[in-house]
Image (cartoon, rainbow, N blue to C red):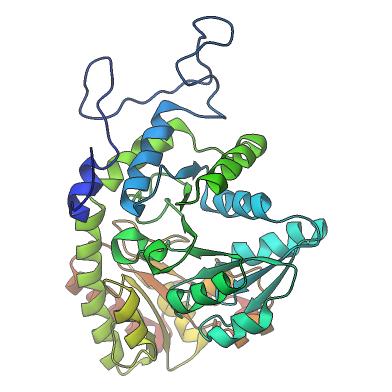
Amino acid sequence: MSTYNLKDSTVAIHGGRTLDSHASSILFPLYQTSTFVHDAVGVNKGFSYSRVSNPTVDALEKAIGALEATPPAVCFRTGMAAITTLLLSVLKCGDHAVISDVVYGGTMRLFREVLDNLGITASFVDTSDVANVEAAITPATRIVLIETPGNPTLKLTDIEAVSQVTKRHSILLAVDNTFLTPILQKPLDLGADISILSTTKYIDGHNATVGGSIATRDEKLLERICLVRKTLGTTQAPFEAWLTLQGIKTLPARLRLHCEGAEVIARWLETHPAVERVYYPGLDSFPQKALAEKQQRAPGAMIAFELKAGAEVAIRALNSVQLCSRAESLGGLETLITHPSSTTHADVDPELRCRLGISDGLIRLSVGLEAPEDIIADLEQAFAAAVSGVGTKEVPHEIR
């Protein structure tokens, strides 16, 4: 089906989807198989081994490609598998990458523990200032990878401005668009070459799978990524692909509700006497609100905040929530509350975390689909418990 001029909610349900050839099931079948029988030597129906390709994974790739307005995406076992495969597809020993300084901690760890040892280097810079990107580019630079909004402080990077720099230097621009998805931000339309998603998050939306995807309009680059994926064995599994296919159908509707709830909660947090600072692109106090309005369709549903009383009270508040779930993910139906400095960014040097604004007292909130009034009530009681010193668990020694 052509998705030209169709609305996102229609594309999410129908885009890139076909009925199976056997029974015309409205849900594409789960091909839970490792291998496929050949009709004759060298003759098959397009599939030979699920590490290379699988019909259910192919169906997911077409559905994501329809959302991204690209050829079928390439899907991976995890979001980090997608980033790793991309970087190994375009970088070799002696090459260099420019990366957003506020980025998922696993991306930093990938360079420090793996790619540095292969002679591939990176500069982590504040990409919110395009001049920093320009200054960091060397003759060895092959790719700029930005994450916007950044994890966990929600710092933004102007995709269009950075794309003008990368095009001038003839290097690739990749955008990790996990926090917004192509429903709320379209990096390729803003000049990026590559869009990366952790499908674990909003794309699945139900905390049921882990996965990742890469979308691009560059057919040659797609071929290269597929070859490296086949070689590394980072292909998404059929069952996870099948579950993710179902989650995509409700993505626009879920995001609308996520964003509505997040705005209510962010405004409440900003007026709460116990809260020192709130990071949310929909607030007038957010320093990059104008950029958010320029390149995003909505502020998103991620919030970060700090309490006035400091790190120990923040930890006690995290340990006192009853409705929100303490967990290391985002984008699901359930509201998840996270302590980045001990989870997503635990492997980042403490001094660097501090410079990046990831304090020991920073709290990240992924707003789910519960009634915002109920989430607010839970946070209110958690703040009260934390301030009174009756949090349910001890504050870790390293935070004291």
